[in-house]
Amino acid sequence: MKKFLIISIAITMAASSCKAVYSTTAIEAKKSFVLGDNEHEAFEVTIKNISKENLELSQMPNGGTKQLIQVLNAAKSATIKIEKNTALYIENKSTSKASVKLNLQSNTHLSMGYKN
Image (tube, rainbow, N blue to C red; front, side):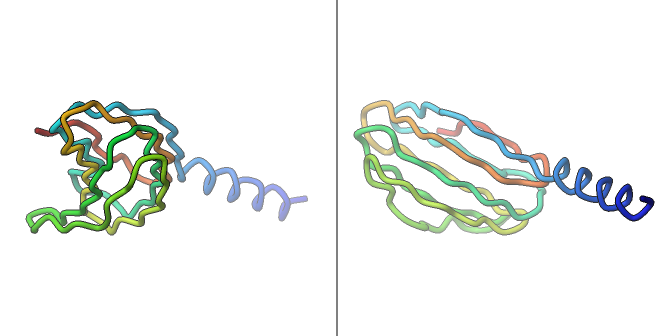
């Protein structure tokens, strides 16, 4: 019984330390949505482009240079793994509003916000 209790507590703690965030996010024309522009652990995000516009996915380590990962075409999905202390930029370079569905798996508090 004691073993079962310890295993149950361990599973509960592990499950509560991993957070899942589901969001539909709009990105205005010529703007970016940024995940993880702060100190954090590695994270994984699945992004579905639910707009007619292509989006650029880039990463930038804190204090580093932004690097293009891929172009996410309209109606396509991608799963991206981002390293510790690295930001993911979802860039809408078009002249129309774009939207994405995000499924974020993280065990830390990530900053999320818009940038020009």
